[in-house]
Amino acid sequence: MSAAGANGLALASRLYKSRALGLTLGFVCVVFGMYPLHPPAWVWAWMVINAFVWPHIAYQSSRRASNSLRNERRNLLFDSFCGGFWVGAMHFNPLPSVTTLSMMTMNNVAIGGPRFMLAGWVAQALGLGTSLLLFAPAFIAVTSEAQLYACLPILMLYPLALGWICYRQAVTLARHKRELLALSRTDSLSGLLNHGAWKDHLDIEFQRCRREQVGAAIALIDIDHFKTINDTYGHVTGDIVLRQLSKVLRQNLRATDLAGRYGGDEFCVILPDMPLHRATEVMEALRDRFNALAYTQDPTLRASLSIGLAPYQAAHADSTSWLNDADQALYEAKSSGRNRVSSVQGSWLRSV
Image (cartoon, rainbow, N blue to C red):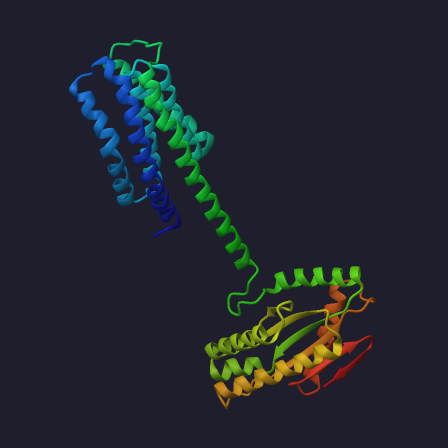
């Protein structure tokens, strides 16, 4: 089912209950407006059908329609047409007429905005015109006390129901927005931050270190000979290795540490408030755990990690220069034999 179809069915389901409630309450209002006029039997029959049968017909037609959203909009315009018809049939009795038209307009604005509100007004005008053709034009200028009380339930309950529906829709949209934002900042394979999101956090951490004059370290992690793993064991195994590394990162880092997938087989970590010697110990332990996990999964799979570490330094011009230091350290780790942790501080490198 297409997204538009799913949205249409969801709209039809929401409107089914509100339509049934609104037309039931409206039925009471119209009955008290029509009773003093002594309408013929077919008017009473149509009143009952419109209030108690039409909501179910509208819902079933939307469920079976190829375009549920478009069908439901037609149903709403028919609601407006009927509202206009009953206003004319009641001879424009002030309170029942205003109540009927305002409830219909409120519904149309909530569903389709100003443009659909105008379409609803046109449908109401057509309904009015139809009623004037069927009934002698007349105007009842006074609303009786009984008619006033008959209008109170719909005036009180229907706006409450419509407001609740709009509130639930707003809550759902807000949740979807949060989920989409999370997806846009998450790497689908590893479940970690993606490249762009991690770089944003790196900029924030750099500014924090500069502002508060505190320390931190960043690590770039590369899976050694990952292309060979893909070529030898296949891309499915390569994906498993990537997920294993992301799992090791989540299980062995602090809650305040920020891990991400930098791209391909390269991962990245921000270690706030951590001195270089402690960051080195953490990365060494992480490297050992990953090597042991990979060996446990498949003894023939020689997966290991090369890691480059760089501490924050006041001499860094920006987060990019900090990242370049980590990249330089990673290059040193790979060029000096791989499966090791190298760190850079100032202008010198240290391998462990």
